[in-house]
Length: 328
Length: 286
Image (tube, rainbow over all chains, first blue to last red; front, side):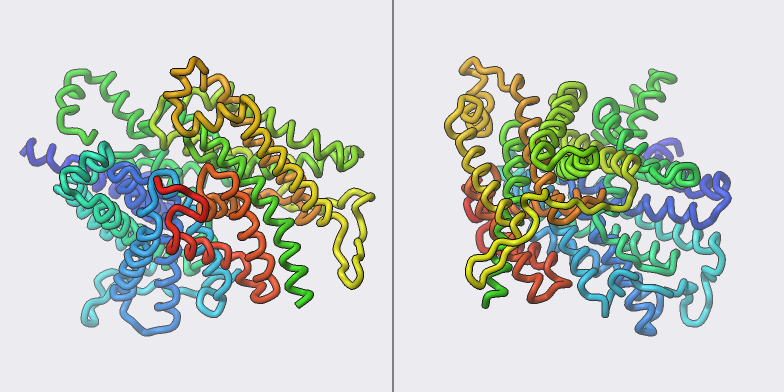
């Protein structure tokens, strides 16, 4: 029993987070927002923490998910699960294209290219108003209930209804990603991150591995974007701009990389604190700029790293025993 | 035809500003080995320094000298006080630090000057137009092309003919080898970072009379500088020059052909260059 608990420790923590959020927050949409940005951060974490890719292009996939869902829901009568699935596939395909251009480039070019391509997709969305609504964005996106053969499973009427829907999808994705990072594929990504030359020598096609990780990340981030668009009812230009990429990266780094729970922690911290700060001060982003500098200088493990340090301080033996099975 | 010629000449002016941005980015990357995400923020600071100094009643020429120097000093201080602490950390944290710095600078600019932009008038001596036969052209843009051409030569001389330049170039090839020659590369890191910020600040001052100042101009500039570096090839002076001019001309000509998509075409051009020449036009295979 304890062994089983230990094995699924991270998943249990995610379930715990899903259960605690409604208890902590008064607003259902804020709670959904935490989980949606946690999804986006999970996608970014897979790249930064496992594949060693600092991607500035996560906003592209978030926006592609938002727009794909918005266009399909406002123009076609496709059932909602199919629309979500299409948005996810669109995210993966776009990630495949972006990755194909960017991953062939080594090191520093990758970061610069992902930022340049983020701008490119922003301008694509901006210059095709007949599809994306241009400056105004797509408006009046409906929030549809989840129905199977005419039976309504989840009504998605109130904000808390929607939270349940998002929470189920979030837990499914978390579980799947946990399986991915624990698989041989995930371990190979870590190996590629730590020593690309040796992996190439061992016969791994590292570009293929990174590209696959990139597509998984794109799919997850697009799901986040689609869920966000359905929640807010709009797909604005801000869902695909530079700032979105910045925010997703910020959440991931604040939470900490290399562990999936860390991204949930980062998302909760960012969404709740920014919501609270934005009531008081319009320039709240300044706080996060300084926080990002402070984390880079003094706390590279992010909030998750800080929690681990605290845990080790409180229970030295338990932490030492645990260290053996942690992700590096 | 005349219209396109005009746009090409416009593009050369804008392209030279892009070249300045890209060459600064390249110099910093060459020695310090990370991409400075605060480069766009330094450009914004330069532009606002120009606006502020002219508001205080100083003339443009003084702003042109003082503005970039102030930006360079700020960068030097940041490097001295904070940035040096991240050198030992993994590479990502250098980039993330400068990203945080860029966010902080942008918010501080909004905090001080407000989110709405301002127009900056060109100096009185450069107002109006010059005429060569049927060709009419704004004086400020003529000045821009001439001045940046002189600057390009000066930067080239600095990199190729001075001791600092040779250390920067050698350091970007192999920092270990330079250290073995009893040159402390770390000592000139601050100077290099400040030099990079100085070029960004200068680009900002020069761009201010063309496009006004606003707090979000830095992101656009950063992305364009990346495009120029990717197109031209990192660490290559001629690449930055060629890339900058190419991007400037593409943007300028597309403004007449498809105004809404002019900015988009820069990135399409970049993608095309990458497909044809993955290492950039002037880049060497890595």
